[in-house]
Length: 356
Ligand code: IPM
Ligand code: MN
Image 1 (cartoon, rainbow, N blue to C red):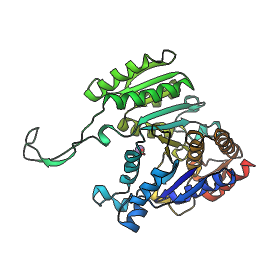
Image 2: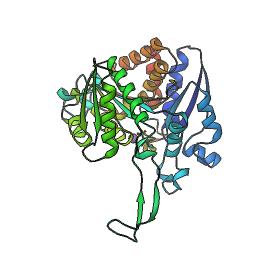
Image 3: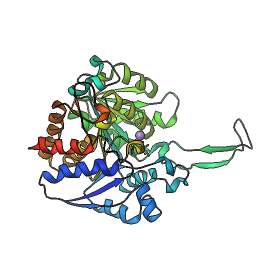
Image 4: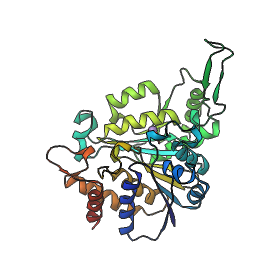
């Protein structure tokens, strides 16, 4: 088995190093190979996703990814910006199914921005379609408007689109995931306004007929945003498109106390996957040794479960993280009175120690 390690920018290298440290003590049989990606690759090779990095990712069973991006690249042409690396990996590897669990650890309920009773026991799974929608739809660009409110003015446009097979396959992923947990799927759309999401709703409904044991309901995205902060525990599996999923998953992340805790998995139809923390590169705290590595360590656990067929090892990592939290060890993002503030490396060491 081969794991491609792509640390990226900002806090990426620090947090990925801790996850690799944890993986190595498990004594499993895999090889790793590391490559530059994002701003780091741009600096070295003039491109955020060099051909060699893409090839490494394609040839691997799984990719462990840190984060990309820094404000200093905001003025580059879009194709050269660090974010294009992650978008390019998703597209080129066909990673259409993005799993973003939002679990509130009992040890962290008071770190949530919501009241304890609303989040205590929270365990929801957002499944975001990741290779379609307005993120990738063509045509897109800038031009001089010939119609609309201001003919003759500069305008920009993107295209929101989904095909039936794209919706079918993500719906199957959601229903199958729901079968393994609370047996409920909420499909989030904007069918009251958008053609794209009327098709989405119709297709998800059709696929749902094949899963009579799973309860399906539909919710408009604005209402879903509200329900997520009103009564988040009412959700089980949420399935939605690329852009709505981007937004809702960040909101859901904060319910759990810290986005620094949340792993994610992006899978293709061969169960090849890219695993990354749900948070970004946090350039403001990069190099300070304070970033929370737990989201990346938990992403490595997801990788063992989904792509490397090592569910026991995955469970061991998850139990070790739980234990470390119970010991009161906290990076600054989850620190509160009465707990012990530690840094990135100490957190990685604590997980290693908890693995026994
Ligand atoms: C995410 C990120 C990315 C996205 C960016 C970095 C392109 O926000 O993974 O959620 O919008 O998908
Ligand atoms: Mn995002």
